[in-house]
Image (tube, rainbow, N blue to C red):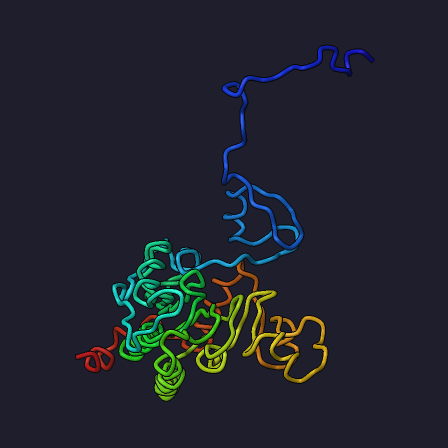
Length: 297
């Protein structure tokens, strides 16, 4: 078995001859630790083929998944937060905004766009958790309100994709006002019988859960998403009791009647198409009717 043993000792490979695996080729599932290539992970829509764990993705990925050919028209893309309270914590709020914009290449924690999903018109507002924890500030509320106005004007169904840690503390009361503002806009959408679908992703918490995220004609979620108002630790300290297993998971929330169904990301586009077709059979044609054109005039 001498062929199996290293006969010479002290063999050293020169640094210039060493070959290392390039970074960014592999993805390791944070749940089951399965390793797959980045390309396979993307083809699987950023979910694990072994355990179906859904990695967090943002508006860029959701728009690519949903809109036909990744073609859409973004709305209010240059809107950015001001500093109404001259807020300073470890740094001034305007400095934090500029730094986050530079890191994420986003203007704020939400992007809105309209396009087609399997040939049907749809307006989508999607939150980005990378931008200050997807916190809801004045810009988020205003962009949602304007997206809803566009849906009403063109009679197009509205999809809200929530992913947030809650209200943005740097804007205090201005942030909390967005709960009432967006809820009022959704009430107008409901009066005109235009479908609203709310997709809750990981995590959806705080004032977002307490307002527009739970007001959909259909409230749906991705598997395993954290959904709640206050965090589990805060609730446990408040009530002084241990919480049930899986508390605030999408499956727990579904079991207790706060969700209509849970959908795998690979099935999301087709399920949304079925919902839109069921709720508004003529959604893709109404905007071309003479009455709709007159309303737009």
